[in-house]
Length: 221
Image (cartoon, rainbow, N blue to C red; front, side):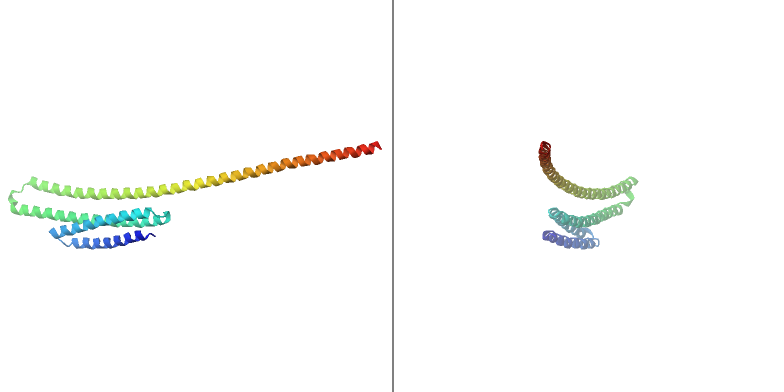
């Protein structure tokens, strides 16, 4: 395994553990302290994203058997990072919703008698829009993750097909070599057969001549 990849991996694991602790701490905070903690977490997420990209590039530069193992680990790290991002968004959304509720409460306390039904409806619509926005963000993140997984799978399939084509090409070269050797063997056998035919023909001719000579001498006596 690549020492460079292992170095990035150690840094990511330490950073992920630190970010998880910060998320837990952020849930206990309010107001500006919570905003500051969320800002720190987002900075850490950017660093984690950079480490993920570096690990991905390093893994893809290695041998196929090693690369497959590292990419599998990398998918787990990406899933972990996405979970952290989702948690941060939830914390930030909770903070925004709390601030919105506080503002609504203060407005209602200041002028309760003048609040109309239409104003209440608009406030409810604003809350619904905020919730819908959060849902759309979550759905978009899910689609992006599925698309990324599909892209990695396609790359792996293409690599496998390339290896299959290379193996098939090597096999065809081997078949061509065998055919060439077979042709040479057949040609040599044909030449030997022709030589044997001429030899046998010559022997038969000699025997026939010898028989004729013997018969001639016998008949002449």
